[in-house]
Image (cartoon, rainbow, N blue to C red; front, side, top):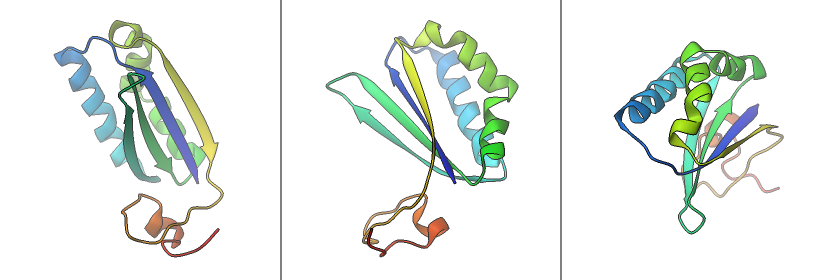
Length: 114
């Protein structure tokens, strides 16, 4: 499994940004191999992170190579004050089962200890 973490600094968003952002999220959810997502905000630093989880690297590539995603990448400076992407292989996931997480069911590790 893989994760793609997109961290970005807030900029000036307009309706076009919101539409494109929503479209990309919807496209991601339709790709076979999409496992889920979560979003985090560090308001003190003015940063947001969207983490997408994927069964395979090929599934992730389908999103990265989608024309709408490419469009957003080319236009990011219009709306963002910087960004950074981390692609990582997920080796394991665990928790006590008391919070929902996109990988808990996929890995069957909601109560497994490290």
